[in-house]
Structure formats: C-alpha cells, structure tokens
Image (cartoon, rainbow, N blue to C red):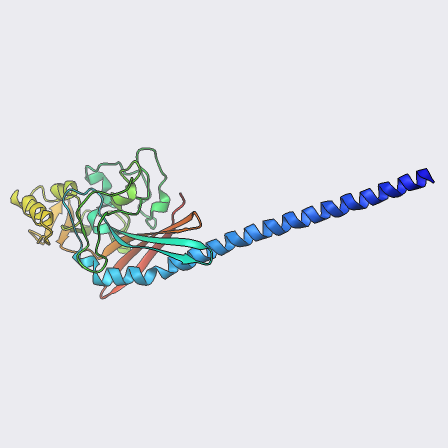
Length: 292
C-alpha cells in the first residue's frame, strides 16, 4: 500500500509540475505577446505621428520658409519649425520638426571645390544622392541633430538669433554641410557648367565668402549687417562663376531638408525628408529613416 501510495503521490506531483510548467510557459508567452503588441502599437503610432507632421511641414514651407533669416554667427543652416508634446493612449508623445536649408550648403557633387569645415567622403555621384550612403565617423556624424534654435516663429520670420540651445553632438555634420539635392537629378553628373542656387539669408558666412570671393569686397559686409539686424539681405549680383560653376544668388530657398523626431514612451523615431518646390507646389523628393 505504501509503495502504491508513494507512486500515487509522485504522479500527483508530476501532474502539478507539468501543469505549473505549462502555466508558466503560457504566462510567459502571454507576456511576450503583450510586449510585442505594445512595441507594435508604439511603432504604429510613431509612424502615424510622422505622417501627421507632413501637413505642418508643407504649411511652413509654403507660408514661412521664404522669410527665414539666420544670424551671420550661426554655423548650422537650420531653424526649428515646430515642437509639440501631447498625451496619447500609449503615453506622452513629442514631435519636433527642424528645417535645414539645402541652398545654404555645398552641393556634394562639388564638395572638392570648397574649403569646408568637414571633408566629404568619396561617394558615387552618379547614383541617387542621399545621406544613407554615408557612414558616421567620430569627427563627422552624418545626420545633424534637431532642436536647432532656441527661439522661433513657425509662421512668420523664422530668425535664428542664437546658437543651438541644447548639445548638438560633436559635429560638424555632413548632412548640414553638404546638400544632397542642391542640384537637380538631371544635373547629377558633374559638368563644368552645372548650376546651383545659394541663399544669402541662410548660408554660413564661410560659404558665402568663398562663393563671392571675386565680387565687390563690400558685398559680404552688406549681407552680414543686414542679417545681423534681422533684415533680408539682397543678393549683390544675380549669379557668379565659381571655378567653372554658375552659382545663382537668391534671398530664399526652394530646397529644404526636414528632420522630424518623434518620441513615444521613451523610444525615438526620426526621418530625414527632402522637399523641393516645383512651380507653386512643394514636393517630397526623398524620405529616409534615421538609424541612430
């Protein structure tokens, strides 16, 4: 009887162990499923927020981008478009949009012609240009950080009057120095007569000084003083010849790179979009997901 009773107890224990193990396995699977679903929900909402930012971007491009005047002291041709925080069913979400003027940078097809603060890596200029072709280096990260300005007016004169108000990484950034879309796709192949446009109200002074090196020495001072006083600078000439390249001077830009940063429940999602004005319409030419 004792032996049978012992066997019976062992069987009961075995059933309990199996049942408990199965229950733990099911609980673990359920927990994993919940975490996976939460991650999927976060990613889905982040994508929706990225898409939801596009109307704000297009409105800013249409109504405010032509009024941007940057202080001559800034080295980053960027301005903060919008910064919002709000509650969602998954927690607090923040959406920050920063605009980087492509017409205030060196075209990467012509990088060798300029003395820039960072060296452009060798890339195949015959392929569709994009910052995704570049790799971060300790001395020159690719994508510039957002939150470019301490003060901004989204739909008025967006004037950058102070240096960045938060740490911006090591810099200088390749994506804030070399423009991937300053030259149209039809002119990607380097020719001696390729042309591009520079914005005298947003370009850093080191770039303007090189482009205008053969013009009246007063031109740089006039541009610097106008921007320092918050006034729009008038291009001193329509165009100049710079090392065989025709450079048109403008008081506004029709090419902007837009960085959108979404943070949800401590997880960040960022995109880098290129917008180009075609006639009266702003079109998105490229959208890259920033892997950081």
